[in-house]
Image 1 (tube, rainbow, N blue to C red):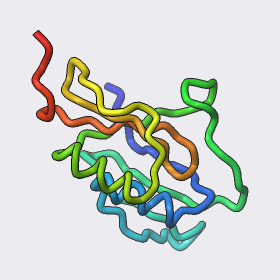
Image 2 (image 1 turned 180 degrees about the horizontal axis):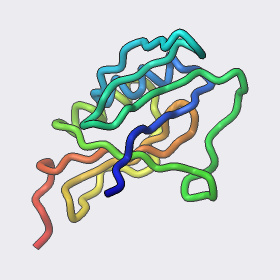
Image 3 (image 1 turned 90 degrees about the horizontal axis):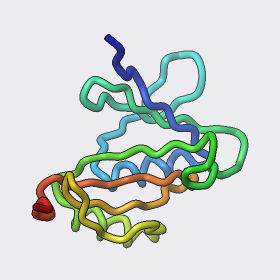
Length: 127
């Protein structure tokens, strides 16, 4: 059996990136292993989620480009998360839309990664 063990993001501004993911609802804490940089991390349903600072500036590849990633998260209140992200000035790539699993928006994190925010109970499921 194969399971995902971790999702590690590298960020030009780790504090801003951590603030973005906190607005989604992730409870990120500072973590220090004694070797390497202090970073942000948490356990998310058995998956280690971490944000590490990088010394290089840059942006993630374009959405759906080779080498890009597309993390997605379920939240309890899509409207609340959307409002929090808008107040932060987050770029919305795909406005609120109904999907077979509920509703979603797609936004851009501070490093340019497209991130899907889903809510299973927000929209009625299509028939």
